[in-house]
Amino acid sequence: MSHLLPVLKQIQVMRRNGHSVIGMKLIGNGDSTKPEDREKSMRFTLQSGLVDAAVTGFKSTADIA
Image 1 (spheres, rainbow, N blue to C red):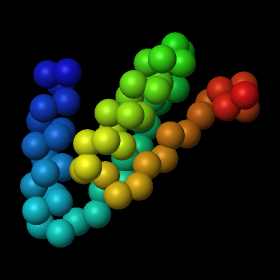
Image 2: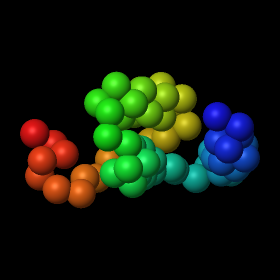
Image 3: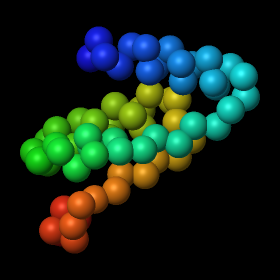
């Protein structure tokens, strides 16, 4: 989680300056293979109150089945 702190601080600055934020690659650019890890990542991002929209993406159609 410590690697997230600089990112979260920068997003807070952006929000204070009136910028909108789109969360991208919420599940580790497709590297996260466990469904529970994907859900945890998405919940963290969406519940943070720092993003206005989110795009998860996927590597193949099997990822969304």
